[in-house]
Each structure stands twice: as C-alpha cells, then as structure tokens.
Length: 420
Length: 158
Ligand SMILES: Cc1ncc(COP(=O)(O)O)c(C=O)c1O
Image (cartoon, rainbow over all chains, first blue to last red; front, top):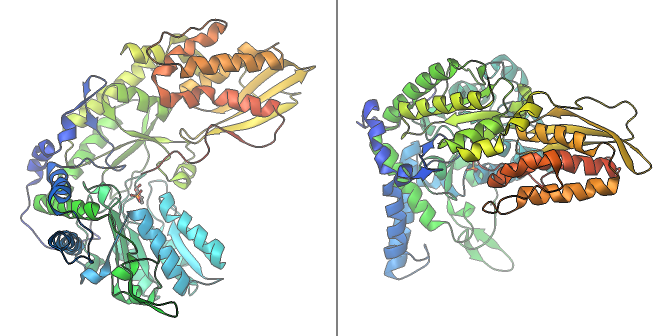
C-alpha cells in the first residue's frame, strides 16, 4: 500500500463502519443450500450494492438512448450519464483528463487493446515485453500473441517463495530491448501487493513504459495514476462493485495519440470516405461501436459508492480481516497459506494436507460458504508452487469476521468428513 | 447435509485415501494421460489388453477425492472385462452420474460403482468422476494424445 497515495483525502467512513454497509448488498441476505450466504469470492467478482442496481435500472427506465449521436432529449441524457461516468472514473484514478479514460469491457480487453495498438505501433522483432511470474492469464496471453505476430520475446520476472517479485532479477531483465513492462498491482492468486511505484521508476529510468493490471488493486487500495506515473492502468468494473462488461483503460495521452486504433467502426471516426478516414479525438478513437452504456453508467455509480465509503477505510477494514483470517486459518492443522508476501490485499489462498481444493470447495458450498478453487487463471503461479490448484477465500468490503469464522468452521467440517 | 454424505460415501473416502492399483503397470500396452483443467488434476491410466480383454489396469496421478476414488474403483471393475463390456459399463456409469437429481439412481449392473450415485446432485463434479474413464477410453483407442474432459479453459474470471 506504500506504493499508492490517495487521490483525494476524503473523509470517508471509519474502518469499523464499513461492515455496516453489508446491508447495501441485497444478494447477501439470500440463502444457499438452506444456509446464509457467506460470500468470499470477491476477487472473482464482487456483489453489487443497491446504489448500482438502482442507477442502472433508472438508466434503462428513464434515460436509455444511443449516445453522442442523437439530437433528442434522451440521447442527451444518456450521453451526459455516460460521459459523467467517465469523469467519475477519471477522478477515481486521478487522471489528468477524460481523454485518457477509454471505456472497455474490463481488464482483459484493456490489456488486449494495449497489446494490439501499442504493439502495432511500437513493438518489432527482437524487442522484449517484460511481465512477472504472478500474472493472470489475461496479462500473459495477449503478449504471447503479440510476440507471435511480431517476433518479439516475452521475458518473465521470477517470484520468490513468499510470492514477492525478485526485484534484482527485474533490474537485470530490463534492457534496451524492453519495449514495455506489464505487471499486476495486486495478485489475484496470492494477494501480493507489488511495489509498482518502484517498478515504474526503474523502467522509466530506461524510458520503458509500464502497464499496471489494476483488476485487484482498484477494489482494495486508493489508486493515483498521476502519483504512480504509470503509462497504462487497467481495471474491471465488476470487481469494484459495478456491473460486468464495463471497465476502463487509463493511458497517458501521448500514448493514445501515438497508438493506432484498436477496432474500427462507428463512433471512433471523425470522417469516413473510401479514400481516407480520419479518427475521432481521444478517447473515442479507441471506442468503436455502441458502447456498454448502461454498464458505464453503473460503473460510475460503483465509483461513487466506493469513494463515498473511502478507499482508505475500505483498505483498513479489509486489512483487519486479512490479518484475522490469516491468524484463524493458521490454527487449522495441515493448512498451508500460499502467498505470504509482506504486503498483501484481499486474498487468502491455501491448501490442506491431502485434501484437494475441489473437495474443499464443494463441502464449503454446502455450508453456504462461497470460495473459489482451481488455478485462478494463473497457472504459472500454480506451477511455481508445484500445486495443481489452491482454495481461495477473497474479501470484499461487506465481509466480516463472522464470515471468516464461518469459513474456519466449514474447514473443520471438511477435516471431519475426510477423517483428519 | 444428506447430500454431502451422498457424495462423499465411506467407500469413496476409503479409495481416495488408499487407491487400489495405484502405480505404473509394467507390460502395459496402452496408456494415456488425462487432464481436468477445472481441478488441475492429471492422471495416467495404464492397461494391458490381450485378445480384446483387459487383463490389468492401473493409474497414477493427483486428483480430488472423487476423481481418485473413481479411478481406483474403475481399475477394480475392469480387470478381466472385454473392451466391449468396459464400454457398456462406462455408458451405464455415465447414465448414473448424469441422471436427473430428483430420480433415485438405479445402480443395477454397476456393482461397487453405484457408490457414485450421489454425484448427480453435484453436476460440476461429474467431470471428476469420469476423468479416469475418459482417459482409459483414450488409452484403449490407442491414441497418443492427452484425453481431456474439457474443450477449453473452464475457469473464467479471476
Ligand atoms: C489480476 C487480474 N487481472 C486480470 C483479470 C481479468 O479481469 P476481467 O476478467 O474482468 O477482464 C483478473 C480477474 O479475472 C485479475 O484478477
């Protein structure tokens, strides 16, 4: 968390009050398999507060029209709502201008956009793209595809046993050939908070731009792209209490100006003739076709919701839960935590002696406890630890110590069933 | 709770803990590697087939309780069966797993394999229970490729 500073210091809620906002999330009062739902899968996707649900509903009921192209009132309302959301996202990330905020489907599309457009503009055979050993598949495969297309080479910074980046190796791997560093801010498989500011400074000292995959940092830490000075920052709305299919790419204007468009179509052009097409201004040059307007509006509402609570307070609350959960899990005989970095956020990944994560997941589900099991779209991380899979409990602002107690009780049930 | 104990029956837990015919098979003339990306599980099935009869069958690998127990019980069930009978047994077994959850499973003709009747209440676990069988069929078909219960990566999101 040292790597980021809050964009604005808002009063926000005190950490202790955050859990009181659990009741803002209608789904959390439902039952599963006859038990109260204990949702510990927020790294996968978060639940949505009433404020987001209501805002999207209202958009469709009162404001729906296509944007940027109507002369009628509804189109004006829809455009204002969508562009208003862009301004909210700008302010959330502390970007300089809304020209730097491209709406996309989510983190995956944001990274693909950069791999495609930055790749086309700036990467050639023999160049290197540098990622890390703890990336989500969405920050691996687009670069592999780019390397296949261009003959560039993918390099990987290793991680140590705790799940921290080996910074000396990073410095060693940075070279004149490096055309981009792309790394995860907070690991979804391990919870590691990477020292991104340090990573960016080292890259910039060699004039190498940096993409930060913020899918798991945006929900948990205050993010300030100006202070970080990252070149690109990607996140997904559905992981910050907003809808699926709506996310954003922040990119420095100089890059967006220099990069060719990602997709062609309506909205991204200024004028089209068969001889010559000129592209629209930023950020629309990168937004071809009718956007996920309701999704963008919902994302704006989610940003408002989070900022009202205050990311600092949310971070403090989740940090308390993480410490409590770590302590409680370690009481369980035969349980090993995977990912023990000194700076962590939101994630408790673990394995239990001889009991497969898949069995753990099934048994917990019947106890009402929703976790994720598997490789978490980070197979190289699993390989690094010699594991086929882990069980992962991940936190959201609505979680409480009682949720973690339910997890621990459920794991007791697992041990009981397996006679251990 | 009744459902959980339907799934994790004593016999399944026992075969998970002490799988039978666990190991490589000297003299095997068929083998295949199977993979279930949902669990990250991998197992290799070995078989020695003579004149269309499965003389011996074994497996190695890592997996969840359901996939391990299923592999173990499969090896017991298949020893001495013809390839044709093995295929018939698989069909019956598959029907047992995928039948409607509200209909009581009919384990007729399945012997010990009927212990997997609870799996139908847990549709996501069907692939665990069939991994060994798919792998075996791959092995018997003589194909050198990896058998998989999946076409693609079933894990989306993150
Ligand atoms: C670290 C990380 N990066 C990228 C992604 C991809 O996000 P999305 O599936 O929303 O595009 C995820 C989540 O799945 C993630 O956890």
